[in-house]
Image (cartoon, rainbow, N blue to C red; front, top):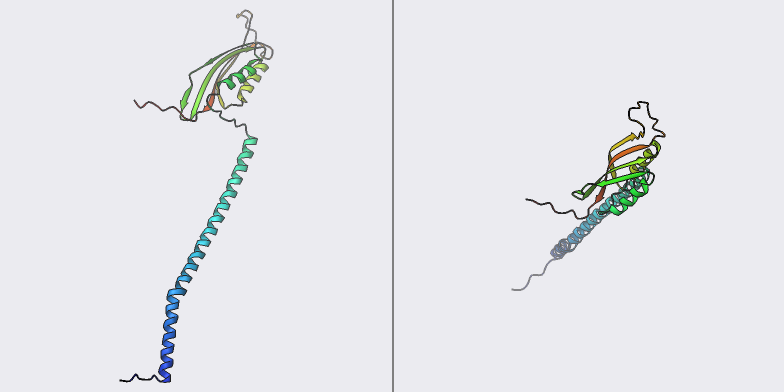
Amino acid sequence: MMPRKFSVRESVLLLGLVVLLLFFAYYKLVLQPVAATVYNSQMRQQEAEDQIMLEQARIYQMKNMEKALEEIDSESNVKRIPDYDNMKEVISFLHSTLTRADKYNLTFDQVITEGNLASRTLRMSFVCDSYETAKGIVQLLYNAPYRNEISQVSLQAVNGEDSQNQEPVDLTYSPIAAKITITFYEYVDSPPEQDTE
């Protein structure tokens, strides 16, 4: 049997079919994967750009917050909490503050630790020459460079004369006896473990 020769019309149709098959194969094997890869790359790029914009907005917001905090710190009387054990600095501060008094006495309670915060409660008493001096000492304690809390203040005129004398005493120029309870706070980096028993 002899092979049949295709007519021109059949040859054109076969050639069109081959071209169509080649185009379909090219589309499926090359164009579609490349288009999917390009689309995925564009989506990843868009996501990355969105993430960069979010990070830039977050950085901008953090810088604004830091600036606001710095302004608050500069305007407020917030004191730092020193690291544990700050006893030497506290004693030095108290000594320099209480040099205005004629005499003074300090009694420290046990240090109490709760979490990362240690508190030292101090009971002090002093005698000074006037109400203004006592007020100045209390103000210095209040403005101490270390975080503290004044929980009790008692100022009383010292009358060296006969106690039956009922005349009012001028506190401005009269010696003053003061009693103050103040607690200083310190930061404990590694708090001691509590007993579970």
